[in-house]
Image 1 (spheres, rainbow, N blue to C red):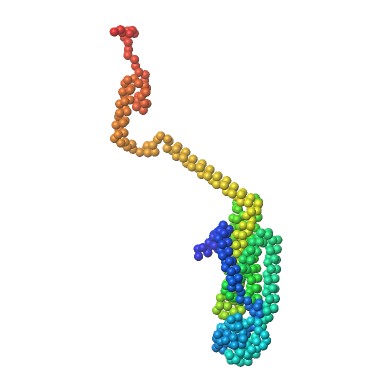
Image 2: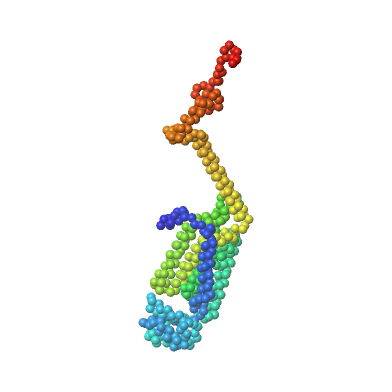
Length: 411
C-alpha cells in the first residue's frame, strides 16, 4: 500500500528509459512465443472465415460423444467439427465443414431422431456460410487494418514527427502480434467480433502512446538552449508524469472487459462474448505495456544520433562537470579554512595539553639536572653560548682582573 500511495502521489520514479534493454528482451521473448504459436498452432477460424454449417438444438440429456457418433454415421468428419454444450440454454452447438443441401438435411434428421427433438423445423436452428463469403470477410478485414495503420502513420507524422510515428507504429504492431498470438495459444475462434475488438484495442494503444509523446514534446521543447536534462532524462520524466494517468485509464477500461471475459463468458457461459472480450482484454493490457516500456524507449534510441540531441547531451555533461568542479573547490576551501582555524587556536610547537598538569618520567628529571650542571660549568669558564632558557638574571659582560698600579707585574 505504501508503494501505491507513493505512486499516486507522484513520488515513485521509475527508470523506464535507462532499463530499456531489459524491456526489449521481455518484448522479444513475448513476440517470439506468439509468432511461433501462430506458425505452429495456427488459428481456430470461425465459420464466418472458413465456411460451414452450424446446428443448434436441445440437448435432452445427450452427451458430446453421442453428437459425434451421429455426425460420423451421417458421413461428416467429426474430427473436423466443433461440438459445444451450452450450459445456460441446455443446448448443443455443432459446427461442421461446408455441407451440401442434401448433407445438411440428412444431419438435421439424424440429430432430431437421436435426441428426440419435437418439431425439428422450429427447434433445430441451421445456418450455413459459404467459403467464398468467409474469404471476402478476411480480405476486407486485412484491407481495413492496412488503411487504419497508414492513416495513423500519416497523422502522427504531421502531428509530431516521423520518428514518433515510427515508434508508435512499432508499438501498434507489437500489440497486434501479442493479441493474435494469445488467441492462437488459447485456441479461441477468430470471428468478426475478434477483428472489431482488435481494431478497438489498436486505437486504445494509440491513444495512450499519443498522450505520452505529447508530454515528451513539452519536456523537450526548449532543448536548444537547455542544459538541465538530457533528452533521455526528459523523456523518462514525461513517462513518469503520465504514469498515473495511463494506469488509471487502463484499469478503468480493464474492469468491464474482465467482467465480460470472466463473468459473462466464463461463469455465465455466454460464448458469443468471449471472442470480443479476450481480444480487448489482451489488447488493452498490451497497449499499456507497449506505450510505457516499448514505444517511448524506442523513440529515445531513434533520436539519440540527431545533432540537436547530441549537442544537448554534451552541454548537459559540461554543465554537470562544471558544477562538480565548483563543488570540489568549495569543499577544499572550506577544509583549508577549518585547518587554519585550528592552527590559530593551537600554534605549532605548543602541546595541545599544555593547560593540563605536567607529568614527567624519571628519566626526564635526570636529563634536566644534567643539562643545568653543564650550563653552569660553561658559564663559569666564561663561555657565552649558554642557552637563554638556562640563564637567570640580566645578561652582563665578563669581568677582567684588576692590575695594581696600572702596570703589568713581572715574575
